[in-house]
Length: 197
Image 1: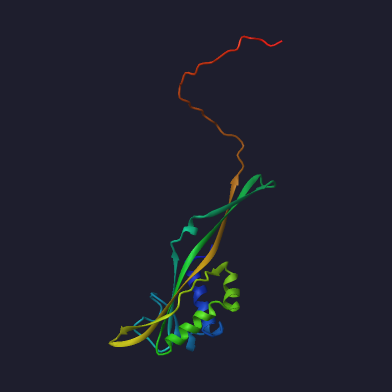
Image 2 (image 1 turned 30 degrees about the vertical axis):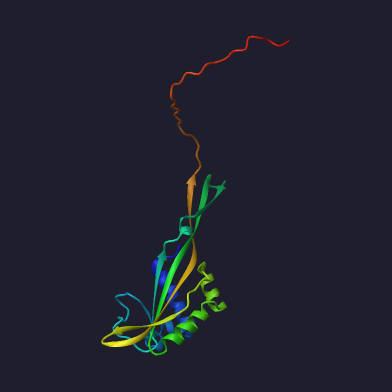
């Protein structure tokens, strides 16, 4: 199972890849990419008020969906340990938001949306058991006022499936006490006295 902070890091790295930066830029704290690609709503991220042309923000949420309640359970008896191993597998839905700012926001967001379908994105996410839900809405340009200035702003909201698994060892049941409690009811019993020869 992937921890939430690790999910955020995965999608931040995906942002670097899809915006055309090498992942080396991800670790270089003084790179252009570090200034343009940021976590949203983080205490250690650059605040929204310090916008620059071409910057983008990303954040990840778990999304309520009916598939979240489906859990597959597969059990195997392990003879050497005399117990059972159960693997619980669950498909969940993630909602990932990207916000692009600046004069190039519309172009950046449109190109980014197209790259979501690329083999590069698919290969990167498949190593984490994450897959794109193909119904990606179109990008729409809006304006947001920040520091008494109107900034072009485009939001891209994308859903993904993620498969999570965990396993559990359960001791084999050797003996159990069973109690049977019934309601007292009277039923007529018919007896057939005729004997067949």
